[in-house]
Length: 194
Image 1 (cartoon, one colour):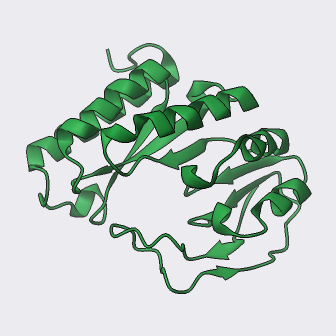
Image 2 (cartoon, helix red, strand yellow):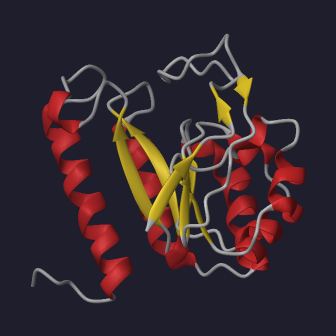
Image 3 (cartoon, one colour):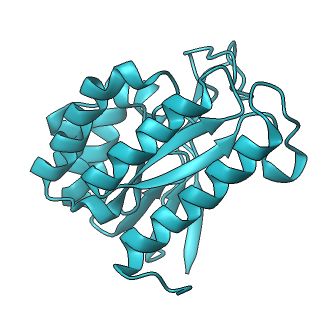
């Protein structure tokens, strides 16, 4: 059985594309249920001033950050704690341009050093936003080399509501199709649709 809990609400970063409340960052002390797997719903758990203390206090079991972790607040100790406590399906966002690849490479290496294999990692990539299609295609190519999955997200409400704002409809559709195939190949090591 899976339970959902929340330690924080809001995010102090104030990113222009995010719908999460920015002004009201709140911290909670949820009761941790005795379920086997727990999903943490926080948009930015690591912004909690007690994030490391909380991680250290958690019992070992299956944990998952549904919205991922803020790579800007990660360090090796946090990555090691996440592995030690049983966190699965690790996600972080690469929202800005391809020029930030060095920062994301360091995050990828920290998670590997902690004991995660690339197939356990995935990166959120914004679609149909200010970052051009060509930059996102470069990110996709790099994730092929790293062996990391992509969580492609339409910033304007998801693919069903997507309107060609910064990208053409063809680019939105093409990138979605390529990410889906990329993730299948990483997950299955063969093309399951062939």
